Image (cartoon, rainbow, N blue to C red; front, side, top):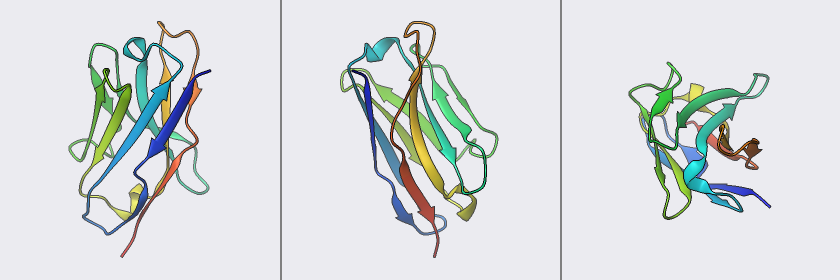
Length: 117
């Protein structure tokens, strides 16, 4: 059974940094396209960042230059380094695994990130 477990959320002051982690199990991690999505209250879930099995990345325009996604295939973990956090980044952040080599899509339970002074 595939499991994605996020960690690293919490309360951060504006301008601060935070790193989210997502540990995967029950799947061939190295074949998966991994992504981070977020959902703020009253808004739709949106893609934040994605990394392919080959290491190609793409980012939402709102986080380009501030966030960085990376993966460690040996640890079966994907990271989201978030810098210069703003109140508008407040949301529940979800880890996602999928792609053509996985054949299905999986979600973590989410981790809350709150940016506030």
